[in-house]
Length: 414
Image 1 (cartoon, rainbow, N blue to C red):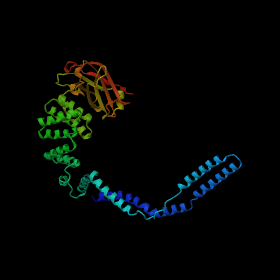
Image 2 (image 1 turned 90 degrees about the vertical axis):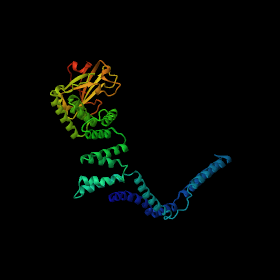
Image 3 (image 1 turned 45 degrees about the horizontal axis):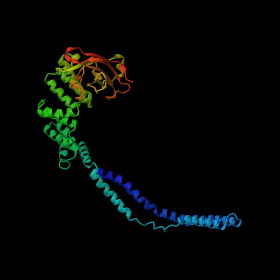
Image 4 (image 1 turned 60 degrees about the vertical axis):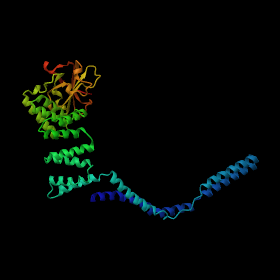
């Protein structure tokens, strides 16, 4: 907290100085203004101009150029102009340079007090306390995970509504094997932050492993809620892959894990998922046909490969988008599967499980256009420089009734 007060002081002191600075120069500015007013010759200049114009007007009358009536009107106009010019030059007496100084200390107190009240209402004092606890534990000679958790737990009663406290405690409990406490912290975080898919997915994962890798009713309800909000949520896809693997459904496990890899950001988790895919492929015994599914619905099996001449333009972490679209191109993609360029060549299945929405599914059409694109930017929208390939008019039918349709990525999108 000492650092916090020092930081606040460093911010307030310049503001205080700016308030005091005019007082230090007030006397000099008053003296300069008084000198200016004393030597201001604007009034004399205006009178001199009036006299010159009046003399010219009198000469014009003497020469007969203006009559008496015109002379009276123009003289009245000159006198009004003189009054207007000299009236603006009338100044009130200057006040003492010390006048009103008492207001400055009041403004300074109001500024300091208002800043402190605002920070208490809108600032991150609680988060600074959490940061200070972490620093203290890291610098302590006997600092440990247990000490860190103990110090954070002491803040529960002081910061019950701070989501950062619970988001910090949750992974610490999980790493320490305190699963029940991890669930409690995560549920409290969900109460504060709302039912976000990423948080619900982590809760489903905890519940899944607590149930010894079984999809209990509670876990299934969480999984369904997450998939309704975000069908590509990688944590939930990982859970479904593990469950399928445990059931011996290796094609489904590979499918789920591939989709998870395409959306996960943590490189360690992605590497773990890839190892799981390799294991499932080995168990399946046929990596070229590892996407065959037991689903009875219609779809298309797609075998994707990359033209060797374009291989140098591809990085292993580039995303691969495999889409099925209606022939007219009027609907959203009917099925989408994502993978990584490092997995090429690959064989995937496009069926209703890969639909983006319930209103646009591959089972609703008899033919589709297959499009495959490699995106280095990871964007779903095509970008200049992406690599792609396509096949028109592929018949949709039973998956086990035909061989995979081959699509070669052999063009550059411009």
